[in-house]
Amino acid sequence: MGRWFNRSRKRDDEPPREPTPSGPVIEITVTHDGRSTTQTIGGPTAFGLQYRALHEQYGGADPRTLEAGSGYAQELMRHNEVADAVAVYQEVVGLRSSALGSEHPDTLRSKHSLAFALWQLGSPAEAERVQRDVYEARRRVLGDADAETLRSGNNLGWLLIELRRMDEAEALLRRVSDGMARTLGRDDADTLACQMKLAGLAHLQGNSEQAERALRDVVRRMTRTFGPTSPVTLQARSNLLVVLLDSGRAAEAVDPARALADAAGRALSTTDGVSLHARHSLARALAGAGRPAEAIRLLADTLPDSERGRGVDHPGTLEMRTLFAQLLIEAGDPRAGSVARAALAGCERVHGPGHPDTEKARALVRRTR
Image (tube, helix red, strand yellow):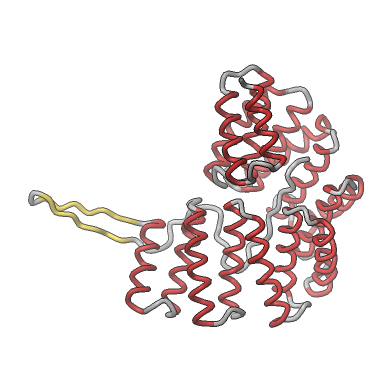
């Protein structure tokens, strides 16, 4: 079954997906043999130096230090240094909890970002624990009907789906969806995103016809409200493709998948998650429609973008690499062995040795021997 792709609207201090030039820049002048050269340092290194300097000068509880720490973690995420970002977010959460309290809005925003980073790192169970803390705290402080509480519940429900805790996810998401419709409106982007998750859950539970009907309705409403090429509409179209592909309708999916990949390529960057998922879906459609050579060429072009934009061990990258290995094996391509071994190594790191995705990759490696 294809991976159900999720992209929530940006909230709290979740980092943008592309590197940006803003932030501190540090100039260092080095003199050697009477000659001086100046080097400019930016990016995560400059953010880190700024954070540590403020921490030393003002202490960890100072607002300037805390803001700089959050910015440092965001910059690490922009550059796909996810493990380092997790460590910094954990430090910032601890500092904010001590200085402001565990349920202060700034502390909860940092926890939200920590949960996002943990998921990116391939630790959904830990991400779920942190996101649940955020949701329950917002319920206590803001109430069940508050928009931020509902958004936290939406994110928690999706993580529960990732962990295959389907009954718990369904009960939560139905409650959140009803609350969002009342608080935010039936056609709000977050309300529709929650309904997409419910459709995805129905699909994972084997109710693909119900999922398809719900998604076509979401696509129609998103197109009317936000336009055909808005990120949320492209997301909905991408999720609809998952249902078609997982239902064995690859030939039917080729044209809409190509149209979606073209639209996402124009509207978004080549490393954006929606764009990558659209190209992955197109590769799946081409392979299922008996056009494996086209699928192989597309994956060869797309996989480096996924590694650069989402990370080498992102679950979506791993799934893409596994499909690439499978098609290379079937084509007798000499690259198959190395790609299959890389897929297996990544799945073992992220999912563990007994996960179905790891077993699938292991079976591919055996076929290359």
